[in-house]
Length: 124
Image (cartoon, rainbow, N blue to C red; front, side, top):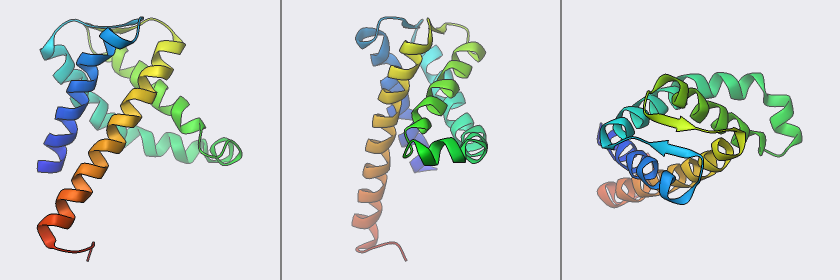
């Protein structure tokens, strides 16, 4: 549960930072960012694996770079689902997906590092 809350908190921070960094992405307020981050986490856990499985051949031939397109599509779906979170076009969705991917990598590293410190070793 702590991992989920940490991931949501980092996604909220990324959602709030995106409009200041990327033109074409707007977040109305903090509540919208929290809702969008929760929906993004749910879609990443459910829809993303299905899309990655379906697009495996394309992803294989692009050495995994097609995953960024999948992330952009999921971010765009979140903008459709959440009123107050808007993305104006494919390029802002793609760059926003890059930003979310970077935040996700940081979250994974933080979670792994805290787990290793807590247990005193590797994953048993």
